[in-house]
Image (tube, rainbow, N blue to C red; front, side, top):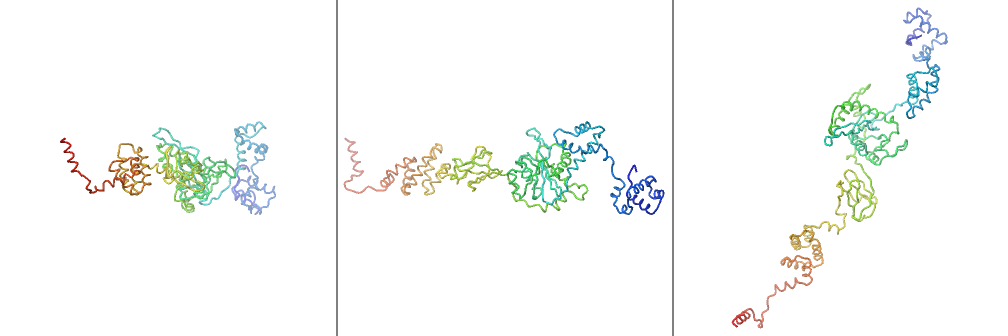
Length: 523
């Protein structure tokens, strides 16, 4: 019986010939087996009292088990002793610093004639595999998206700074089609993680139902086997794309095994072909990585009649949820108190944004993205601004400022003529004349405020006559015009210019005074 085990089809022929009464030599000639082999099988048949009809009805593996009970080495006392200690060795192997070689040395010290190192490791690995079997998972199209970061980074040379920039690589995988996406990120921060997710969904043309990330700090604040606490930014991202986030368990890469396998494939099909190429900017590096990933998705899969891209386009992409028209923008939430000047100070940009002055001193929640800045007070949006990154600058809306502050801020050589011309065109010439001298404009602002006050308080006909006199005599000062109005100079001046001298016999006239002057000269 030593040597290679015979095919069970030959053994069944042997049994049928024996049942028909053929002798050993005849059976050996007909089956091509040696007489010794035929004799050994017939001896086993007789010793075991086996029924030929039952043996012929068995399948080949069952029939083989009747004649070949198994490897006798598993009945060896060495194996029985090792089997009783394998559970202990497996638990010890989980402890830090403990190796298989160290356990084998301790095993050899426990008893004599033990297994050598290779056989010891074989039986130990068999136990470990038996204790952690893997399950076959069935994935639905468009259901999940596995994401992870490659452990090794890829680099490019920044020629302006003269340094090598090492960038992390984001890897995503749709488990149904095993379709892969890779993106070179600037960093592994929350901003970089969300940017990569947005690029991934844009590339896929839709969003799945569930997102399965690792327990990276950019997404998970507090890891937990049952209810992990997510970052608010990532929660906003999931709500925006109508997705559910289910982080993998801690130290359980098998929860997203297909993505782990894609990372290995990215190493061999992206990193390796690009290892001898030099890139000088991030964009060219991203384009090269994207080209290699596309070739990877178009490569025919082993033992399957299609590639990843074909299955994704045919069966999975139509089932993805449609994306919003605008890509997701990260929202940051801050609480500030509206300052006395009617502004809130955004500390990230060191910039001030205005709020309606009626909310001065109130608590305001500021929600800002890369573009807009929204300010909420008592759950109401009271202001929205375009984000400005100018350090120490102010972004103000005219309607948010009190009227007297608006007047103060709008003062200029053009403001006062325009303000005065709302009621009458005559004051425009007065204000234009005021700013025509060599003094700075600010020198006349307070005087112009006084002139506007006089215009509001003085009847229009009187004020117009006063302005005519002031312009004619170049009297532009506030005090001069105020005195004209107070002393009613406008009326008196008008009467002197318009009334002629009355005719009367007692009036001597100019001739009389001329004669008087001639007589005086003769004397």
